[in-house]
Length: 398
Image (cartoon, rainbow, N blue to C red):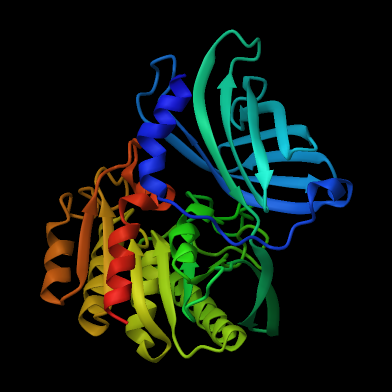
């Protein structure tokens, strides 16, 4: 009962209505031959023990092989797996274990139940103590199976060039409007340069409102992230401007090559760039440098890194330059953002960002924290806080 009330109150109003067009999936009568990979979100309500009054969100993956279901949640902090069997009616119940990577042997039980329909899995879950006596959180699961593809990134080095395959997911609408939204993800969560980041930011909830309105949505992973090849190089432990430029220029070079391939693949002249955190910063600054390739920018809590004064100042300078140079942008910034609504950015109430946006006729919207302790998660996991206004803006500015 707690879960039903929380779901109706918190989640339904935020995600809106509509369904993705999923890839062609065999009927469940042929489920023994089903091969499917689903990506999506795992959003949980406040702790049932009272330990944490805030909500929690994460990314997860489900692999389907015949009637075997396997759930995986693996990031910098924890690892969690669960398995179950797909029934004739498309329902599945999964059970498994999870644990923090820094506390081996101290884990929890995860239980998930839901239904697979047209390549999409929706369900509920609960985490509880290993003996089943204490429930920790009640959760909601939304997964989809976008078309998986890759883009080539040709990386030039001292001894020649290397071609890296970059992971991507394509969400197709039922009634395409001829527009493509290219979404760029955020940071690694602090993993040092050179360390492979195994999880992918494939977030169906972000794609959903756009797909429902006819947009193709492409989500891609920069090198060294998820299933993308190459060495991750975005966490250089330095505050000098040179390292900042190295990181952002390399990310921009990857985006440039991906845009060229997206334009060719879909037969379009310009893309709509969207991104969260570093992806929002990257989208804004790329559009300013290459307006011939971009029609609109959607910047969700955008910034690169503010761990020191030099980088915070450079963030501001770059965003202000992007605002002056490319006007067709919509900026969304949440409250209680641990990265950018802080004294590190020097703008805790976004007064400076809002002023920059207004002075350059850029749409600027402040949203709440979405119930999360860190509001930085809100634009990513709860697009219902901003999607209606952004879609209206897209419609009126095209």
